[in-house]
Image (cartoon, rainbow, N blue to C red; front, side):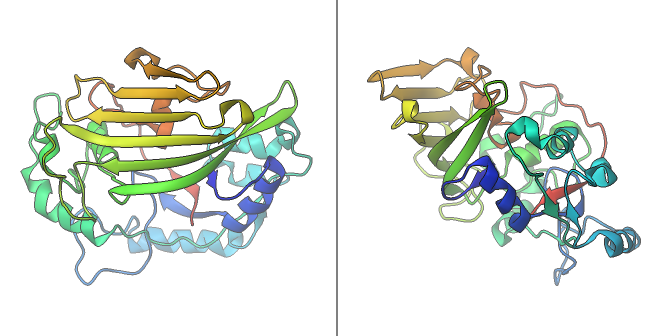
Length: 306
């Protein structure tokens, strides 16, 4: 999803060309890294590539860096892209776009976590406690990456779960929705505010907010400005530390001047004519233990950088 000012899908093509889809990276939960080294490497935060592996990447870049990828040559890098992305680039007409989408390949860079994330990992990783199923039992008392060197799928997902995205954030985002059969597109503009009550790494108080008697994990507020039929619709959601306690989520429908509670069973319902669900934020937005996770391997991919 792209964030920023007003855009249609035709504008997205231009923006994609400036943002680009970038470098090869070692796919794990936390993406890519830069060749710049720490003065002291921290366990679990080292380079994604060994020197020998990086040399192979640099050799590949000699052919591909700076090249424009569109429908005419996307098959040549398809092994590094999700199949759905390849389909969009090859069949732009289906998505109401007359010209091919495109991006440029740029050199691989190492991504380095915030100092707070690194320090929290050093402080708390050794204190993580799990039960026989791998569920963290002192979940609310720690921060950082609980498993610096994850071996199981559950450990990878817990590392994903503990990313607090700055501990609190606000973003204005725009999501085009293309109705392929009707040959039209709608745009949803939203202001989203998110705050984490535990697992905090960068902003005081750390690692948790005090006086959290209700056991809140995080809170979220969403305000919609478009499409017209959803203007001033708002949503607030409170997630709790206790995995057996359902979210408190409420929707205010301005058109009907009515408040509706979002039931736990509705979190997998699709939203507003799209194929998105309430749990699709950040690819997965709910507790980790209720699902069965399977680690199927590692794969090098091209990813967007900003």
